[in-house]
Length: 526
Image (cartoon, rainbow, N blue to C red; front, side, top):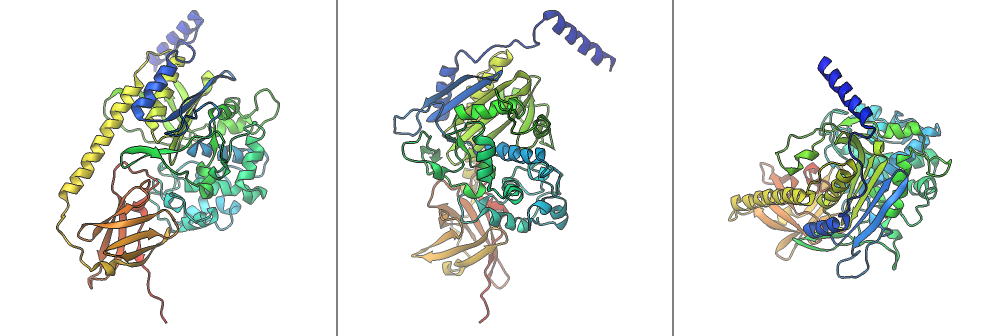
């Protein structure tokens, strides 16, 4: 302890004598334009928008590239992007305003605020608090239940919340971090339960309007021809192309906001100003709630990982707070979140002690692109030697894709391609039910089988025989990840159930096929 105390005193003395911060400070990278252009090429991203907020001012807000492949309309600072899970911090802030108003507390029991709320485990149903809804420690698995809204389904928010009671936990309550979206849908529904106003109205009235975020909206259905918005892009069968907007209205509190870096800069300044609208006396939430929302709640495991150029990004602490992730980088606490919806990924990062905020929005599903730009900017402001993050992230991504391709190829090579299904194809046809998703239908069409998820209009697949009693669901909408469908038979040869699993190791976790267990629908007695 003595040596550590002497070390701290020595550092403090050097700081006082120098009369300057421990780390040199500067402004935005002078090569930022060239860096972003190189990043877009490396990661095949049509358009990117970047904004930097420092000391209560927007230092820069700029767009790069185009809103839509094949069209000339440029991205600018006012171009709207789907911000995905960066919406979660808005839901948290809305609840914070209700805490300030004395209408709720973070530790209120959910069932007392949300009528009919019930989890699989009765104990969890009784003990779950509003705080638990926001901190990814419910005991559910990663992305469990996301197929209730992703791809878009006919289920309402209330339908989705009702079905929580059928989802088996993957771990004990509050024991580990597992990112989920359904708890945020439930958190959003507390707002109308307490105020009588829909989540959309409350967010608009209490946050967007006071911040003068005039063009930001809460649904892709709000877009009109001629509006300044980016189109979503995704690689479909290996080729980047424009994909349809995904309707997230039934999951809005978890990820439906569309905004620009110019208007999100106002949100960032509000956050860095601890809930007080800059230049005005009005507050959206108190300083106390600002601190609460940035306080670590659930520890996130830090993997050892392999030594690479990205090893320098491995934090010493990593946790989830209330709508924000918290970690360290070069001695600073970072408060941030990423967001991903079909065709978009975005990043919001705050460095409170530097009064610094960074926004990077993209119209392609390339998280490495925004991370590369983010850390290039942070390194510049922190005065640390620059790293070629574009090359580092591209190398890591290429390796990840190589490993995934090898895994798929190994599975293909090892399958018994000459095997036959145990049953005639028509025996696999029928209606099947999963406890939480509900029904799917398998029909025989011509010489094959067609698989449809009854509440997901886009989820129609041709079942291609893989081996034995496993088929591959090859979705007609190629933005949906293919899945294996494996049937298990009873001793008498009838079908007991089937399970599903994503074909690619890189499938988005929201395609939570592994959580499904479909049983044949029993014929009703006459």
